[in-house]
Amino acid sequence: MKFFASLIMVFGIGFAGAVLWFASFSTKSQAFYGSFIPIVTIGFIIISILLVYEKWKNRAVKIISITFLLLAGIAVGSYEGYQYYLRSLEIVSTQDVDLSKYQPFAENTQAVTLGEESTLQIEENLPRLDGATALYPVYAAFAQAVYPDKEYRVSNSEVISSQTSGAFDNLIDGAIDIAFLAEPSEEQYQQAERKNVDLSLTPIGREAFVFFVHHDNPVESLTVEEIQGIYAGEITNWKELGGNDEEILAFQRPEGSGSQSALIRFMDGKSLMDPPADEIVTGMAGIIRETLNYRNKGNAIGYSFRYFSQEMVENGDIKHVAVNDVAPTKENIQNNTYPVVAAFYAITAGSDNPNVSPFIEWMQSPQGQSLVEQTGYVPLP
Image (cartoon, rainbow, N blue to C red; front, side, top):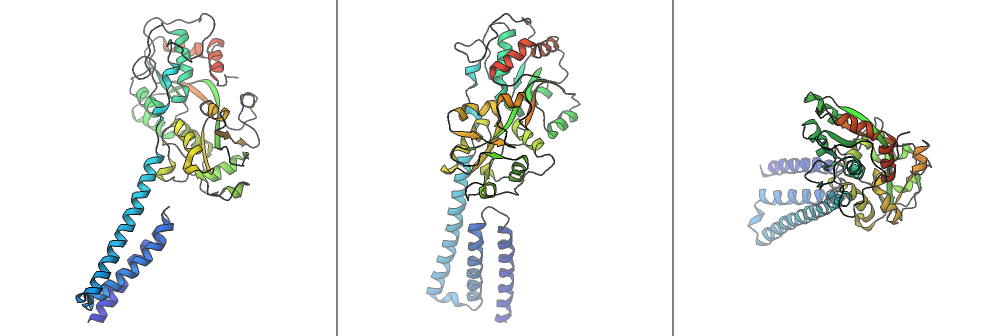
């Protein structure tokens, strides 16, 4: 009877261990659990057989078995605790981006100016503006040229920045009149449709969608297909691209952010790989900093819009990767040789503010386009 009970134990525990072992191959923790699970499975089988044959009455057997179980528990707890600690370090925010330095009419503001009287002045019924972090310097300059001189707080005024997802939500909820964003994602279009909101997109400028690496990474250029392969999970080591023999850490942004929507369009129908939590970065500044600092290694890659990352490139912290051997310069965007260029838009959703239409028309005028170019973006052709 004990023999058959032992066989059932061996089969049951062995089967469960095999299932868990194979499952571990689909996780990033395979290096740990690939060895841990077989050892623990064998240990549980031995302990179960000892229980069936009542060997636990022996003090030494009991001590050894309990010690084994405690060590297994400590090993799992320590490993998972360390992984949680790493994840907590890698998720960062854009709150360290100080947009107040571009605040309209603020003392020593970095928002650019026209140098002449604007042909449009709005004194009352000011359109409420919101948008992506990277575009705030542009529409802050628009407001500074057209709106009356007063305080416009970044968080609570007629000119705010709630980042891409927040600005889009504010737009379709009717809390703002104009959102300055890259083209919305499919999910955002569906979100607007569910609320019976018709979106109107007016292009007001262009910008390069760029990829960047650690300044020590020897790779200087990638093809469109190679970048798609990286983010599809098909290319996983830099040596496949002429770089060092290191795993590629491909950072992504959360769903709904402007740059993540741009990446999805860039993939041209290819499925994005599912990144682990420690490779999703919540802010534009964060994705640049993490690409530079990720565990002090030069094997990360990230993406953004050129303007947002340009200062870091000039400081030598990161470097833009050429795409199809074309660098993402303003000249190459203007002459259409850089292959990944996206428009950014003034988006409305049926606002009844009478000043919205003339304001958007002015943004496309020579004066508005001058501010786009002075800010560092590329004006409309």
